[in-house]
Length: 163
Image (tube, rainbow, N blue to C red; front, side, top):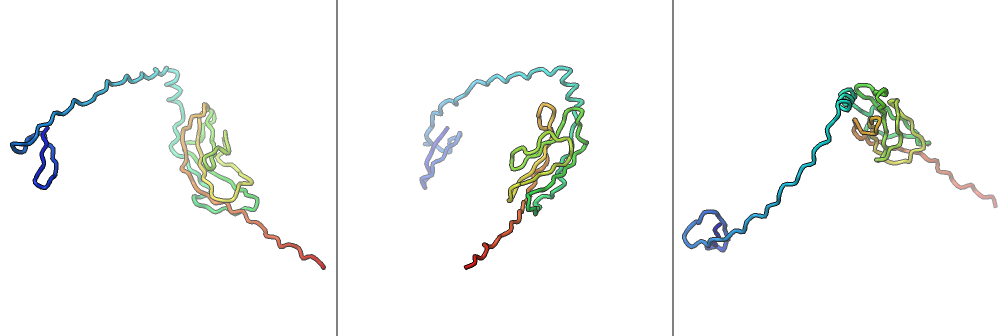
């Protein structure tokens, strides 16, 4: 390695000397580390391979109602969610739906492609549906949608007092 300073005071480095008088630098050796061992994968049994092969592969999962960014007006805070999947949910393999609202599971182990909610707080909520296996492994997730719950309230005027 060579180092030199030009007429304007700029410092430059190169592996080739640009001219006589460039200072030769002694470069320290690079620090190296030995490679780490990669753990070997546990062999998969023929039974597990067959089970995986027969597991339903879901290609589509979508919330169909409410639509994304929907405003729902309900004094009681009630609404329904509907969703569709391709292929249909395979309940014989123990698959089920879960519905999450704002990142928390609110309906679990559903076999129907719809669910009803009541007394939901007003405000904006995020909804997502997942298909899970018998062991709880997530097989497919829908896109998250946003819905806005508008709960109307009645403002009561105070009663007039008689004098």
